[in-house]
Amino acid sequence: MPSTETVAEPLVSLRDLHLSFASNPVLKGIDLDVYRGQAVSIIGPSGSGKSTILRCITGLLQPQRGCIRVGATEVHTLAKEAQRIELRKRVGFVFQQYNLFPHLSVLENLVIAPRKVLGRSRVDAEKDARALLAKVRMEHKADAYPGQLSGGQQQRVAIARALTMRPELILFDEVTSALDPETVGEVLTVIRELTEEGMTCVLVTHEMRFAEEISDIVYFTENGVIVEHGSAAQIFQNPTSERTQEFLRHALGDPGRRPVIAHDPYLLTNLSRYSLSV
Ligand SMILES: Nc1ncnc2c1ncn2[C@@H]1O[C@H](COP(=O)(O)OP(=O)(O)OP(=O)(O)O)[C@@H](O)[C@H]1O
Ligand SMILES: [Mg+2]
Image (cartoon, rainbow, N blue to C red; front, side, top):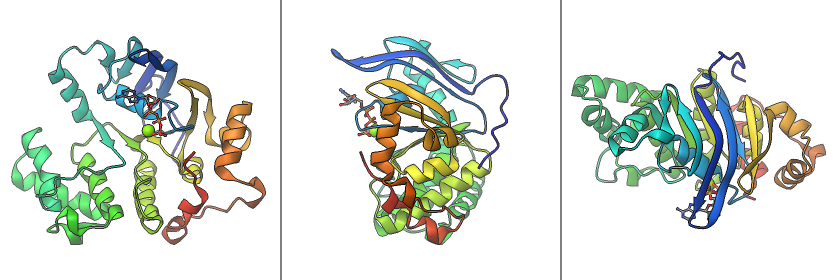
């Protein structure tokens, strides 16, 4: 597990976030902090507002009330799209759908944003791209096109692509839920390595065992509120709220049969059978 050592100021801070879609209140007073180097997971039932929270952090959605701060940026005050684009250069976002450009090779998918958005030279951007492809074990597919890759391979490329922007933090929104069980583990391995290297990550995931293993802090959301949050050990082994207990009972099954998680990519490939979409 990554270090839980923290500095005084959180990198991401959400305070009393309220957001409605038309007359449907979806976030009802969310408080959440992410410190540099932490891995924070958000778990909870479908429709509880997890993706909405991530979209608020990147400025893709504007809350009606509350404060969002990322570093020195007061996200809730950003009025111009250009300002939000600046923010998104610093915040990587990886979704369930990898959204790679199908007409570009893997390498070109990684080179395009640093060239166009950061103004980096081709030589530099390509060197970085190849190093990041090696990091996610995809260097051998640099010249392939996304359509020639498995879902897990495409998702690893998508993670490498997010890293090309050298973000301060990365948000992962259910990045394994569209994958075949055999390829889930290879993506989780990449995310685990990033957290071990101290990358600040916020993960929305249904992979409960994975969340328990890699998270410093876990937030449990239901119906637009944070029901409780705490260390992974506290939330998974000793949750105080009845709702959290019920959710985890359902998501994890019989706690008497909990598997031991080893740092072994082979074992990780079998993780998904312990996860449930609820
Ligand atoms: N663009 C939108 N317009 C209207 N309603 C929306 C929109 N996006 C989300 N919602 C609603 O907001 C609520 C929270 O959605 P959200 O996607 O944040 O849930 P979630 O916790 O991520 O769920 P899941 O686990 O299924 O991904 C849901 O009731 C959803 O229908
Ligand atoms: Mg979601």
